Image 1 (cartoon, each protein chain N blue to C red):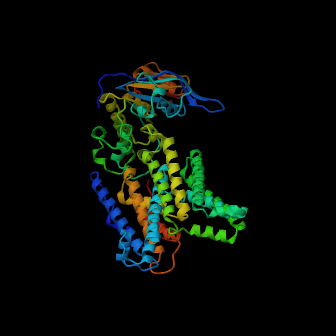
Image 2: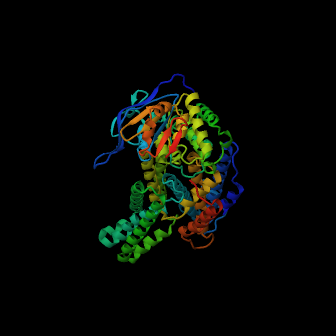
Image 3: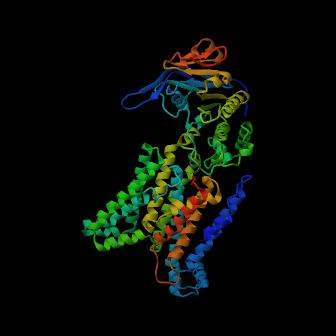
Length: 359
Length: 263
């Protein structure tokens, strides 16, 4: 709830002049908060490790217990990094989709993109077990799971894009996104009916969302795909600003709409796909984080809100993970439940306060 | 920002416009031969559905033409890249912009996109153009307001200002006064006339305000089913061609009082 506190600290006030400096200040607060939450996230967990030992392990100095060292380096550190990648990635893809569809409700979850990823994973985990034989081993490979999730999310996003070309009404696009989600869950139910209990359980656990199961090499793959998506976004930052005026105006100031759409499409499905693959379908961050950012920074300049939304998304994810970890207990709550509990009230609160959501 | 000589910005040869599809072309208007010079305010008038918006979209390359040629600055429009085209033509459209956090200043600054680098950094030259545009359209006081909060008249002025900041020889506006009350209609027309004359821009607008157009435009393009008749408002009134706007005899333009009379 620290983020909520910041929201009230920075009461929205109208800039008399271009308040570039206040953007810097707010971004600095986001970064400091990120560092703080990162440390807090790593220090807390089922095993009680004193803060000094945490620092010792992180800096590579000896002096702390071998088991503690192992927990910090091979479990908590990759988990915290995953949380940052997941939170910021979802925030960025939500933001990009809101601008692309010019709809403040757009986001990976609402448009059915996450369901697409789920379908891909379900087809792999459940489908391979139905086929049986040596195919059933396919569902065990993390790399294949992420590829399936990416392909699934890309397909749904592509379908949504095609539909949105035909249907100009954005409300219809959202409803169509909703239909895609229902459709995918129906297919998943059918698959679930025919698959074995172990595979079903594997899929169920994947669906709860989890940040903690990644090895270092998986974190590395994750980071590479994340960076690739980031590079794809760079050339469209300027175009995104002009898309705020609608496609026709953007075209009239020399923007290549097709290229912009394609790059955003590829980048968001890569991000959503890889995140859903490694951490499961995580709700609401993609919707809530960009809106909180726009409310705090009070601007639509993508140069500023993309990095800020990424930072805020990462912060929310670190908080959610710290809560889900239930410090000093053996239990871990499903991360997906926590982000929804965190995200849903924020979206409602935003709507009540602003009366209307903007891009 | 001011340009000295008056020159021909746009002309067309045998242009025909409409919508092409696999089943065959749906031609909306043909035989369009028009010219547009800097320093003039031209009003495109015609009945609803005759193809005014289609013509404006075709001239600005937003939609392909069916036949004929369009020349911009004596160069075929096909030879322009997207960016170069955006440095010659700027648009003000009828569509409403989606609601966002954009301030008036940020909106106007978007007009500089054809000139800025890949990340959209505004240089001193861009800032000067924006400032000049804001002064010309009297938006200094509203500069840091959110676009959402503006009235229709103010928003239209901001959109015109954005087109001005784009620093193009040709500005095309599709029914810029459609949602405005009488006072704002007149103010918008005045502003456009001032910009055309003082800054030596060619300004083309489509409008249904024929009475205002006859009073303020330097030249009218009268769109009929056969072709486009262009000329000074007084000439079109004298020759009775202005009455081609109506297909019934129950309404006509009275030369004496310079207004429409219903019988």
